[in-house]
Image (cartoon, rainbow, N blue to C red; front, side, top):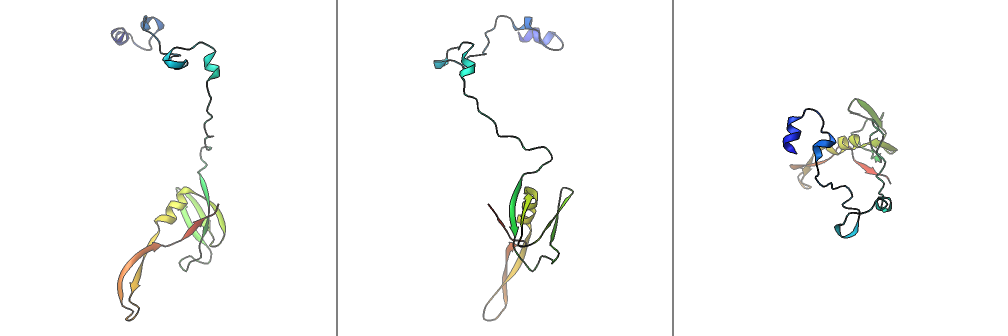
Length: 134
């Protein structure tokens, strides 16, 4: 069959298939036997989850925590040419890209000794902390 298919140009015709057995319907019966025509109707049908509309990103509801680093007019975030303005303390539905920006906004804060108030090192923390709302 491979030799005939290689010689012909374009799509294979039914004549090129020859007398090779077909595997259509092999999984319909029990015990590996081929099933009958009506067996396909008895098969369990699983519905796939509906696909999100194209252009509509998945969203999550969050609340941006109040912070001294956020201006009084709100926090402006731009992701893939779209802009979002988040006000601290209010719930907002935001795409997952905005959440990634918030998670990756890290600031290093100094760690000081209590007695001498001398800086001993730095630790990373979220610049714009937020929480998920269910």
